[in-house]
Image (cartoon, rainbow, N blue to C red; front, side, top):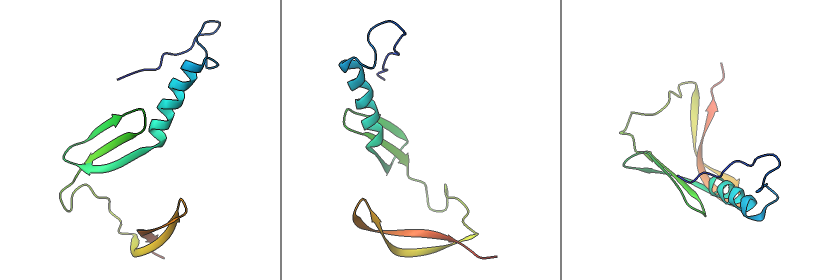
Length: 95
């Protein structure tokens, strides 16, 4: 794992230093461009361009939350980043 060294008061480099600032920007961009997928085991990978969080696929009926107070509404289209995406949403049941 690569760490960005902390800056120290009165010493170089500072965040005004181009190299240090670019290290911070690269790390933040990798986290902002995170992808999440299912796989055989849990892992987290980071590159200069993005990061990938792989979550282990759970057998049917395991690893899911209890949504007893909610109803599913399937095949709803939402605008996400300017594109129509089909999703399932949960609606809280009325008392």
